[in-house]
Length: 195
Image (tube, rainbow, N blue to C red; front, side, top):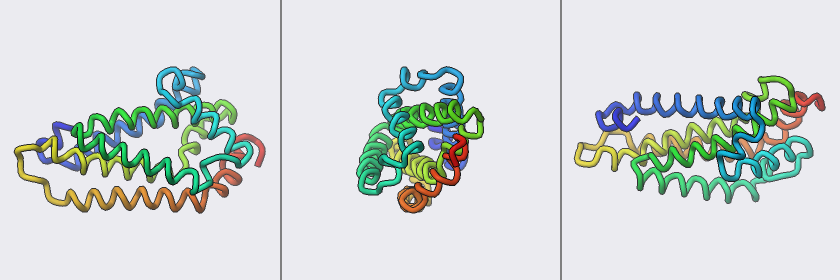
């Protein structure tokens, strides 16, 4: 990713980081499914996130469907991610992303174990979470470019990349607020044989 950005090949950099995101997102979930507790051992906060999400799936109670609860957390994560991306040329943001993927892996792997189907590894990735990942990828690239390309002419379209990233993060929050309860009832509970 860094080499591609340095050479001015932003689409290639985006492809590399997107591949990393897909492999991390699905790989950590599969690892947790086959080895329960692995993500909790590797990623601080993963076990707590897993428990909170499984409680929300089972009862509807929790942060996932409550904007007053999830918006401050999203804003904190977004601010930290942007600061890390700017300060480290994207490497700190990748490290934070790995931890967040570990959290999701703990949740999706445990959900797949309870559902007894690997489909939960995918369906546990709620549509709004996919939007957030896309937003973070674009924002991370936009924020990494100034440091990575220091001494080189700026690439055109960086502002547009940043705005698209913010738009995806906003779409994530809106969709989550509107659709979390429906997704839980119509997709997740049937996976667990309770729909």
